[in-house]
Amino acid sequence: QVRLEESGGGSVQAGGSLGLACSSSGRTFSSSAMGWFRQCPGQEREFVAGISASGRNTVYADSVKGRFTIARDNDEDTLYLQMNSLKPDDTAVYFCAISYLRLPTMREKEYDYWGQGTQVTVSS
Image (cartoon, rainbow, N blue to C red; front, top):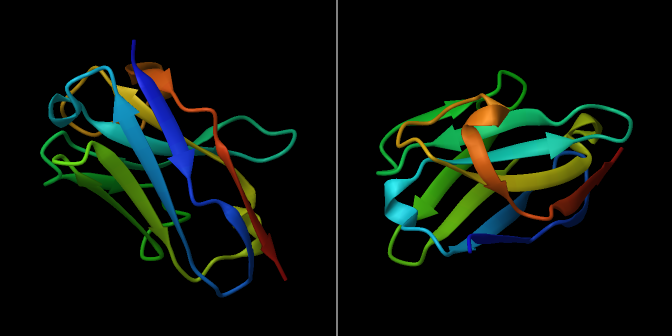
């Protein structure tokens, strides 16, 4: 059974930084693209960042490009998201997800397992 567990959420002031981690088990981590999504209250879940199985290819939503960095450690089966220059609009529940593809994708339907999410709150 595939299991994903996020950690590292919390509260920070605008302009600050936070790092998220997602541990994975139950699937060969190094064979799967991974992604981060977020959901604001009352809104649909949206793509944030994706990374290929090898880690060599990444893709970002325009809203976070240049501020967020996605990375992975295939030896530790862990996905990361470093978030800098945070804005109040970044406040959301952040989810990690694992894809059945090897290349990064922005399409939610191409991710087949999800974590429970971790709250990130950015105050102005």
